[in-house]
Amino acid sequence: MRALLASTAGRVLTAVAAVLLVATVVAMVAMWPSKDKTEPSQALGGKTVAAEVQSTSLTPCGPAGQRCRELTATISEGPDKGDIAVLTLGPEEATQSVDPGATIRVSTDSSAPTGAAKYGFVDVDRRTPLILLVIAFAIIGVVVARRQGFFAVIGLLCSVALITTFLVPAILAGEPPVLVSVVAGMAVMFITLGLTYGLSAQSLAAATGIGICLLLATLLGSLALDGAQLDGRGGEYFQVLSQANVAGISLQGIVLAGMVIGALGVLTDTAVTQASAVMAVRRSNPALGVRELYHEGFTVGRDHLAATIHTLVMAYVGTLLPLLLVLEAADVGISDALNGQLLAEPLVATIIGSIALMASVPLTTALTAVLAVRVPVEALAGGHEHAH
Image (cartoon, rainbow, N blue to C red):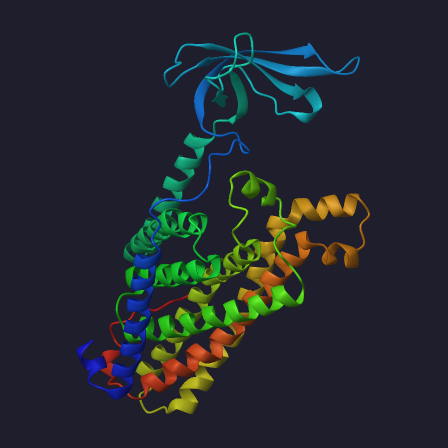
């Protein structure tokens, strides 16, 4: 950093990154939620307790010949531990098979009148296998990537914690979703770059490029949502949000916030790749000027960009696969399907994310090239390479 700050370009870039960081911290402190405005909603089942299935059976129900799954389970936690619950799941063909000995989650209603069902089946308990999967992911990441893998896992955990403790509660507390998402995105970016790549010329250039591209994605996304008249009411969670007494929150803002957060991951990856590529070329050939460095770095970025856009599109397609199957089964034409909000929103998100991604390549490459030729080579030697 001493060598980096010895040059004017290094000081300017450091100052820009510092301003972004300070603005992010100040905005987070100002918008940090003390409490949200929502009321408890049972739309998704509410709080649950664990229960162990003792027996299963099929009992007559509904129209003649129809059978429903029925479970007998023992409550295994909470103040009602030891209680026996008889749970009716629903028609056999429309419900999941549950074997005796399985752990399930049930909802409780202490205010239920005598003779009424006090417990309700919510779902199978998947917490243990999910926790084991996360642990396996962390171990493999550390074993494969070693030190950087360890810090990447720590950064990921911090980012998830930031989203769950700041972004979501702040939106529910009534803060503007778009502003909250931009601030949270910037904070996640600084955490990721700081822990994974350290304080270096590469990370400073990448941070500046990502910050500008996030703002670009926000502006373009807002214009696109207004132009396509997408207000967020076509999503499956609108009714749930209404029941939770958050109807005053801008649903369009939530859609836009999702676009910003969704684009952040690929933006960070691409920006760091470009910064590292330019710095590597500069270290290997200190005689190159800005134009040559930009050309060499952009060549790498162009190849990487095609694969990254494909990855972004496939990620959205994968999440929409059940909806695509439903539309195909209903014989809905492609033009009608794309016209509906359920597909139009992720389509706009994909395009906006791809545009921001494409803008990040020349922008970050140019920023890094201008910086690289104006600082001593020794100021570039401490950065981490980023490879695929």
